[in-house]
Length: 157
Image (cartoon, rainbow, N blue to C red; front, side, top):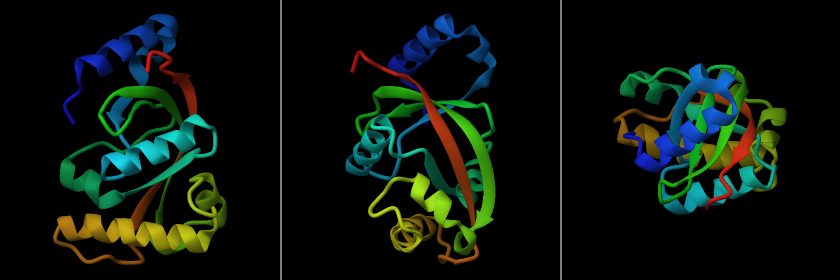
């Protein structure tokens, strides 16, 4: 994702207040694969409900992106690509889809927060991603399970 001037400005302002974060920048991104989902999930983060996110490991390989890392800081975008918050990655684990834990599913803060609901909704989501890569969904596929905390909310939004 090409970063906008707003993202660059927001990160620069954050680093001025938190110089120790200067070398911890990871990326800027929005949750999900559409503006509605991005806004819904971001709202859960801003309310302190969502503290975890799962992503398809294969996408990092295909896109040549590095994996999230502990201590890394990401700018969270809303559905229109505007910077809304900065999160710090607390933990990263790579596990098969069918081995994601109930505890992690709960941290995602979505639906009823159960593992069953997480598996259903994420299978639907990951099937869309896999299809776009020309791959079948596999319950044993690698999933990047990232736990995070919000370190800054962009009050200018």
